[in-house]
Image (cartoon, rainbow, N blue to C red):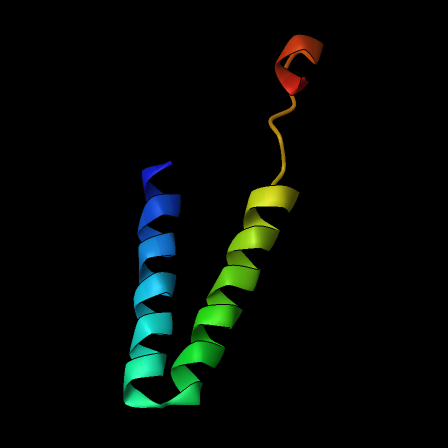
Length: 56
């Protein structure tokens, strides 16, 4: 959970820096990082020994 919060803070700082510095490359970098994090969070593999109750 802490890693997700750190990544969110980095994305937020990149977005603010893009607005203040008028540099669209930073906004593109923030969008790329957020897309990769969404893919990792939603499509990560579950362990094989996970029970049916844990999957809910």
